[in-house]
Image (cartoon, rainbow, N blue to C red; front, top):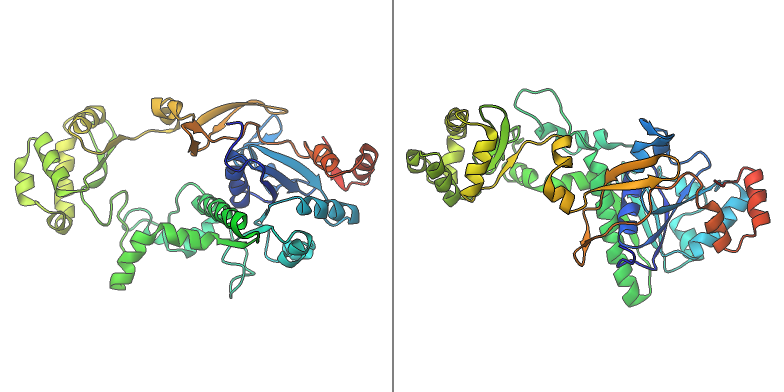
Length: 395
């Protein structure tokens, strides 16, 4: 996509690791110009292996479509050019440690002094204020302290987290969404807004269904593995040669399932979801015995033909070759300046029937320092002096 809905919007991102960088990447996918401000040592994520051509695959996952300005905000010249950059921006986005932006001289008040129309967006661990404002955090902490670990896995399992760092991606998505809303309002009022997103709050929000169980009963929900706490059968099932997913979401669905299994007696014994939930373990055991009688592929084909929601258990190789994934352009190929040919996950966003995706690969550290500073009015001689003094990295 060459020109997106956010074409003409400049985002100044002070981002580390995933949450703010992912928000910045979503905004870049939608057409914003995202200038990633990095210290001369780079985003911490650049240090996480494995590496391709010297570039971190961790960093490559959350930074496509951006310009890298590697500059020391602690140097007087570096700060002066950052102030000029902020004056030209629409959004200032950060997920740095509590107080870091203030120590650099880029508090909300200072940024508004430079540009009153700025949307000032903060992605924090537990919140920008309150008793935990100064606590450090990372995804496993938020999963542990949001209740997510307490409901993940099977009864009796030791503590388990979701494999992905879901808190970062949820917070990044929430930040991008709220930034877009603030930009729409600014277009109407001419005033900037402060946006605050907490990583832990985001994880509570995505557990709203589970929390509703607790809030209605004051009892800790039990772990259910892959099963739903609201519906049954709705989980992974073992077939003769592997597993597949089956979701029954209505009484009609269950009747269709029983018909496909040639077991109308089950529909008579468990006509409603209330009946099925009351006898969940007995029903699931009976279904598992039936489903072991054929392969996962056969069951998926038969039940899907009957109109039921079913799914294959795919590993990453299986997902990579899935025709719908290919059609949706969810895996994309890049030619990176140093890493060479790379492949990455694409954008889940589509606009006017096309993938909303930034056109450039993730940047090398300082790849755009000269371009950004030159656009701000710096001469080549001044940029060379900044580089010689260690205030800027130019590559």
